[in-house]
Length: 100
Image (cartoon, rainbow, N blue to C red; front, side, top):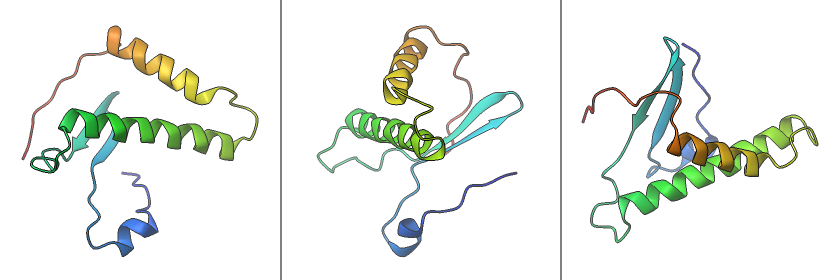
């Protein structure tokens, strides 16, 4: 298994919390999610995850630009369009179990 490096800020902050892990395995997408953390915080879980996913999209667009400057014009707009298309017409079903 090829794991990504944990960001230095996450290592330094004793309150850091891993929220999402994603793998491509056995020809499909597999996720581990931390949810329920916002209960009683004043944040709606859906709003919090919307922010997390939007921030993730911006990080991906920025990474594309840093990796290959100028080769991915409009990356965030393309990611957003594909995201909305995928929500409306998924290329694969969501399967799996919830493990607490």
